[in-house]
Image (cartoon, rainbow, N blue to C red):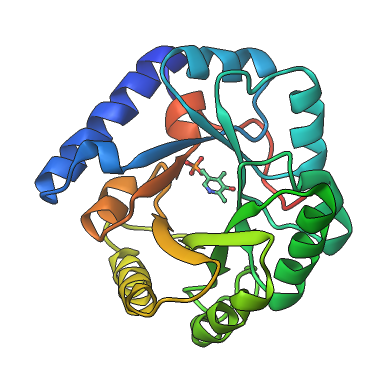
Length: 238
Ligand SMILES: *Cc1c(COP(=O)(O)O)cnc(C)c1O
C-alpha cells in the first residue's frame, strides 16, 4: 500500500491535517494527531514518535501492556481507543493518559473507583455509537446528557469530550452526516456546565476520512494505516 517510510507518512499526515484545518478556518495546532498503533511493533512506534507523533492510541489491553513494558511509548502520551471490558479496567487506569472509549455509566463508575484507589484522576472521553450499529460499542446519543449529569458523582474521573467511530463507508463524504451529528452533540452538551466535565475534545476521523472529520469540527484524529501502512491481520476488538 504505502512505499514511504513511517517518518515520511507522519509528515504527510501532519501536512494534510494542517491543510484541512486551514480550509476549515481553524488553527492546525488545535488538532491532536493520535497515531493508532495496533498491530505495530515498538520499533515502528519509536519511528513515528521521533518523526513527531506525540500521542499513541492502543486498542487492546494485552498489546498495550506488552508494548508499554518495552517502553514503546517513550516520548508520547498513551490513549486507550479500543473497547474496554470491565474486567480490564484495573490494567488501563493510570497507565493511559486518556481512555477514549467509555460507553456506559457502569464503566465510568468502575474507572472512577479504580482511579480513586490509585489517588489519581483519570481523563476519559465518552464513546457514542453515532451510526446506531448493533456491531459497535458506544452509547446511544440520547444517553450522553444523562451520563454527563451523573458525572458529578465521579470525582476521580474527568470527562474531556466525546469520541465516535462511524460506520465503515464505501465512498468519500459518506460519513459527513455522522461527523456533523457528533459536532452538534458536542456543541449542545458543551453549553451546559457539569461537574467533572470539560468538553474539550471531539475525537473523530481515521485514515480514510480525517479531513472530512476536521471539516466538521473534529479536534482529535486517530490515524493508523496512513502512518504505518496497511495492517497485516484482520482487526478485532480486544
Ligand atoms: C485502528 C483504529 C483507528 C485508525 O484506523 P485507520 O483506518 O488505520 O486509520 C482509529 N480509531 C480506532 C478506534 C481504531 O481502532
